[in-house]
Length: 377
Image (cartoon, rainbow, N blue to C red; front, side, top):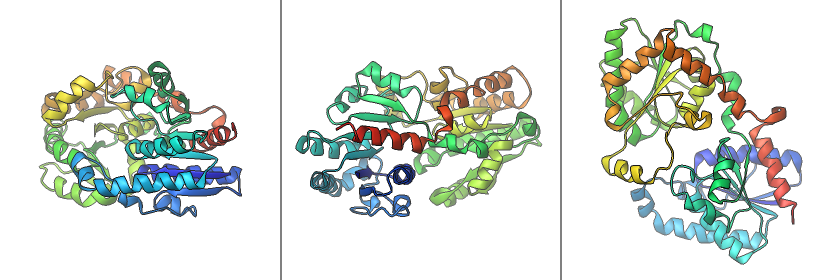
């Protein structure tokens, strides 16, 4: 079979590499074309152009790169039409990939299209779900509540194939008995803008926690290009966490941490799967806050809370995300009291909700769904 695969950012590239491997295991003669990055290249994939051409986030960076983005959308759509693949697979980056799909579907009405990673239609701009039906046959969801959301919103067929983190449960999950004297994980964000907003708040919270519990150890796992930025930020804090480098040290800390203070993001799902009681905080600029209050459709922005259907992790947003409040909330998790026990009981359910039947892997489930869609004719 011929597969045309498109992603627009490094996280999608990582998913794409696993998908290519799983597809090739099922069809050794498979042909792959499209757009990807270094991880997909290690699978023998040759990208039409460098992923860096389209991997941009934020309004101003997108506007600065707009001529290149528009050119690459047109080039990619033309390449899909010329290739006439058995199936077109879009991986995340909907602002780029969906535009390509619409152009390709217009020229090839029978083209099968699979979207791997659902846009957050359940959180904001829900009308996108219905619009997706014009160019997408199947959505592969990473979160277990997303198929119901697409059904409710009139979107395409949607299948839960599992989050890649469930493949790392053995590395993540720690036993409660091993956390008795563990450190507090400090996770102030993995993006420059989030770190700039949350860094001072976390610094104040740590100083207050240190005053409440003088012997408490703080650790901050960090990896990749943001490490130098994190070190520069932490260097200004009166109470400095010990910085851990690399994934091995990060997951070892997740297995033994007594509690965590984290900025909202995918890391909260890692913490939930590891069984670490956590306090979540987040701030956005005032304009984004005003817009968000009008547009966001969900009662919580914390992924584990959405999956569990309850506010297992307390979240403190905007003005509530201050050092005093966060310090008190984390302190309440350190003792074996009602708040800690409530979180542990809730977190015990999350693996059950996210694991796939029969021990299937997310990449395997995704590959099977892609092949089934391609074979429908």
